[in-house]
Image (tube, rainbow, N blue to C red; front, side, top):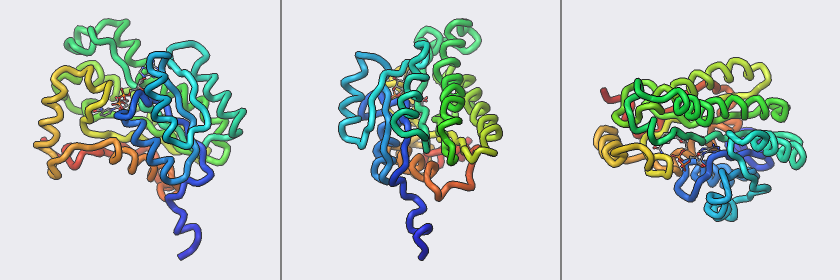
Length: 261
Ligand code: NAD
């Protein structure tokens, strides 16, 4: 076997930016751990001072080169993170965007009742920030790279209580398609992973989330729920050379629940 074949999934010497760790239960945490296990060095961000100790506790267990604040709605914070990437590494190999937010008042009502402000905020944080991150990553991915977003099947089908996040995730998926087409010529690949329900902080904002978990476990042919480790395994594969012919994919991590009507 050639050296290239044995190192297909190896991330040694690769630098990745992980946006979206809130705590040890975050999907981004599972991904960061998987990237690290394959040898990558990471930069990690936290939302605000309240979140910092929880994110720092995760970052301590990683090969983490820097930990910076990043509220994508605060002017300059996302840019400052990429300035650090440029100063420290001079390039970026991959980026995970695992960020979502919708104001509770809008998330908990009918989609048709959502406010213009709430809709715009959810779109800005959960979708447009992915495009901003892609734009900032582009000049740093000189040797190609991979951008990952995290979506949910509530984008395509009406999932009870997912509400406003449905159209927002649909927009995110469309953004992934356009970014994949626009950045493909530069060797930058773009994907969205689509996990089934996982009990995280963001998920706790969705009403009756327990019912979503029960339904997923019942419907999925494997009859088990996705974990953040399952997400990490796919993420590490997608950013590796083993996936270099793939771009613009939407991969369910749900034990097959998406197959069921
Ligand atoms: P989480 O609460 O652990 O992570 C959400 C992250 O979004 C947090 O780190 C939070 O700080 C960040 N965030 C929110 N507003 C932000 C802002 N203004 N600026 C920067 N960061 C901000 O929850 P999670 O479930 O791990 O969510 C990660 C991603 O996975 C989200 O895109 C979510 O929609 C998606 N997802 C989750 C599930 C699930 O069931 N948990 C399923 C499918 C997709």
